Length: 61
Image 1: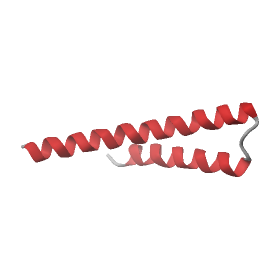
Image 2: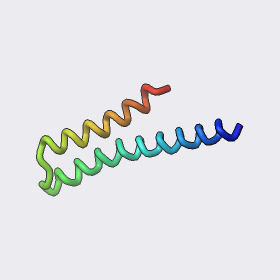
Image 3: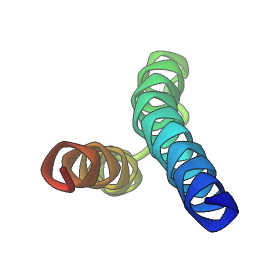
């Protein structure tokens, strides 16, 4: 029972981190673009990481 609880807790933490990563990458790209401090390649890389983390969350269940 305890191992299952720990596994669920770890899974919940990973889900939260991946959601945060997806949202944070989008926000970072918007802010850095508005400030003119990001190049296209870096912006696409950050957006790709964010989308990949959100895609994983959507398809894992």
